[in-house]
Image (cartoon, rainbow, N blue to C red; front, side, top):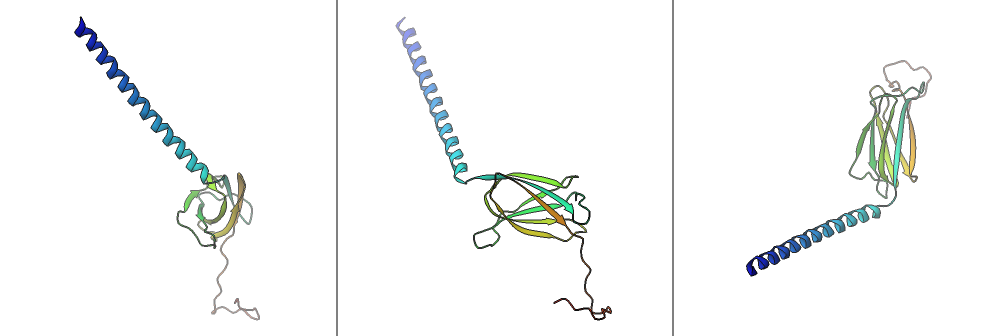
Length: 152
């Protein structure tokens, strides 16, 4: 009978040790998640951006336009890490989690001039409307321009 009781005590001790190890593992995991959440909070406020891309001539949406986002450094230089989005049939696209600060936006679409402009992201939600223009005619020295001034 004494052996049976000793075996039961060993089993209980073994189970307690396993439960303690499991609890320690869960605590380490929880602390890691808290640290990760704090690191995300340290990045600062984030914005949800909405883009609408339309034709300048008639305001109709431009589908499948490529919206390229470039972070901008302090001195206006483009930083690494661009993001690309595509517009839907209504000319819309969006992205969440963009940090506050300067952002360079480029929009490219076939048969339209490339659009580019810098924006200051400073609100929790922003909508940016881009009006794309058709390409302009090219100047040729072989055409008769009469008294027109040449572009400089």
